Each structure stands twice: as C-alpha cells, then as structure tokens.
Image (cartoon, rainbow, N blue to C red):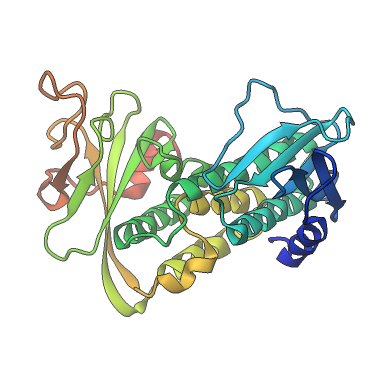
Length: 336
C-alpha cells in the first residue's frame, strides 16, 4: 500500500528554499523494515527527493540503475556513513504531483515487502524493480492508454488469468509476462512463448505484428499466438475491473502481488487514471494457434534479402490450424 503523500509534501515543504551550502538536506520518515527512509532536497537545484538507506546490502557498481524522463535515480554517499543510499530525485521538467505519487508507491512497495519478511537484498531488488516499472510508465507517456493499448492490456490480463488457472504458480506466471518490459513476445514461459493479441472485431481478427522477431520461433519453442476476442457490453468489465479481478485472484501471495503491480505500471496503467476507461468488455473466445510451418509470418530467416525491418498485419481468422487452448500449449512448453 502506498505511503500517504502528506508525509512527503510536509517534509519537502519544510526543506524548501535556498540552502547556504551545497549538498543534501533531509528529514527522517518512518523506516521501511530495516531501511532508513528520508525525504530530501539537494542544493543547488532544490528538487524533491526520496532517499533510501540500506544498512548492509550492496548493489554492484556495474549494475545500471533505471532512469526515467521525469526523475533520476543514483547511488549517493550520504553523510559518509559507508552504507548504500539510493536517491530518487525529480528532474526539473518532471511533474511534482507525479513524482509524489511515484515516491509514495515505491516506498509503499518496500513497506509491503518488509512486512512480508523480505531481507535487505530482496528489498534492494524490490526498490530497483519498482523504479524500473515507473521508468517504463513514464517512457510510455504518463497519459491514459490509447483505446488500442487498453484492449491489448485487457487481453494480456485475461491470458495471464488463464495461465494461472491452468496451474502455473501466480508469481511464475506474472514473471513470465514480459510484454510490458518490451519483451519480444508477451509471455516467455517454460521453453516457449505466447504472443498475445486482442480484438473487438466481430468479423475478422486483425493482428498487428511489430517486428520480424515477434513471430520468430528460432529462439523459443514452441511459440503460440493467443488471440482474445471481446465485445463491448454494459454488463462486461472495464479495464480497472479486469486489473482488480487479477489482484483479488492472487491476494495473499506477496511476491505475485509485487510483480503484478510492477507489470501493470510498466504496461502504462495507473489507478489514478481509472476514470479514463469507461468501455466495458465481455470475452467471446480465447484462440491459441501454434506458430510454425504454414503460419503466415515474416521472420529474419524468411524475409526476402534486403528486408531488415517490417511491420505488418495478419487476420487470425484466416490462419490455418486448430485452437489448441491454453492448457495444451502450456503442456507443450513444459510449463505444467
């Protein structure tokens, strides 16, 4: 659960103004388990910041920290204490309100992980993972999802639910959902992968393919196309309700809950935008087709010489092959 924003705003307000000396000024906030948490500002830019101190955990210098368009994250030598401090700071062009929301969310994620018994090393991964999810969110533009991206996310959530329902442990299933992290396919699970597509079309199933690699099964096998067809109905669910359904389904599993929060954020969804998604959808079908011989596609190995990049569209209604279903596909991947 996110920290109350008033804690951060009050601290930043009390630290506002030009400082006589360069460097950090900070105020202690409630710790997150073993971690020190401070709200701060650094002169001369005076930008809002959150500092998290890890008493014993270390992050190798070779590990690249995430960085978003509206914030920066860095290791800092804070007070010369000889321990790891991670500072999350707002950039001058970044929204103060969005930075506050992010700060509350990141520290809240650490609170939840600490309450679940995570050690410092785990907490460091939680911190970096959550900041990375915000990086993806801001890279996607921070605005509400487009109608196309909205139905696409609904389709991926429905497929995720089907994967969990087939017997894959929730945390494992959500960790396999790499589409929001710009994975080539949407799910990498077992030895294979799912590429998810969704449509509202009642006639034809248009599926946009964004690269030559997207339907290439030379790296992961078997590869399946999972198409979800919806129709708009007032009795259906909107995107926030699909998100909440998934949250309820994994309730009690701390690791799955953490991963889901990161993935939906990286996918471009944030709860404060829930009023932007009035459309309601009902699932008509999930069609799972194996990508292989006879499947219409362009790949690096089949594209004519000279073609190095391509975007194209196929109609899944015209693709030969039987609907193998999610369960059988997962068995062929060795996931269940």
